[in-house]
Image 1: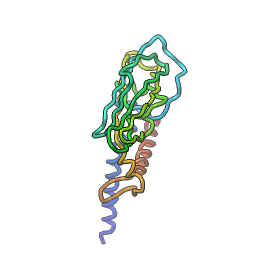
Image 2: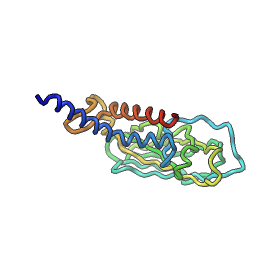
Image 3: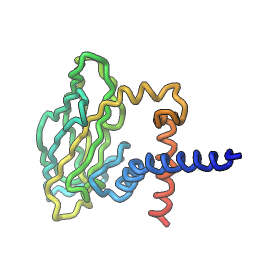
Image 4: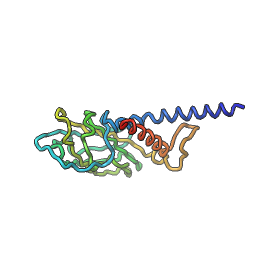
Length: 208
């Protein structure tokens, strides 16, 4: 007797959950498209064909961990001075401080935020999830350049990395159902499908 009403209520709950879950990916996509909040692309760029040898830009590097992520990442140099369009390399060291194997994901951001779209990375440890054994130390090379179109009033940039421990999330993604109505969790594949759908919608709006 109440089956149709129950079905509608379940669908409503699922819809509300999906919308709330999509807010974070939606925000990330918006930042990706507009360059606001300093978020940058996580894919390799092409090398620049132009250079502005008469100009100098200072680029600084910082890292910090999210929550209890047991990682330490440090640049070999705190700051470099570059010429726009010139490829620059900076070495980083990373260490898993825990006694267990962990998986690290580094998320970059640029300050000031409006300059994010002018910093292009050809190689970066942030492009991939980094699996690290207990107490393991690793070396990475960041290869980047600052676009020649960087506004003239910007002479300093900061590239910051936030380090996340995604070990449990990665492990949980294997063999789980798309959605668990008991505890409200979702699988990584389901999360990515929501993000992809939102991404396409925002892309359409931005180019419409």
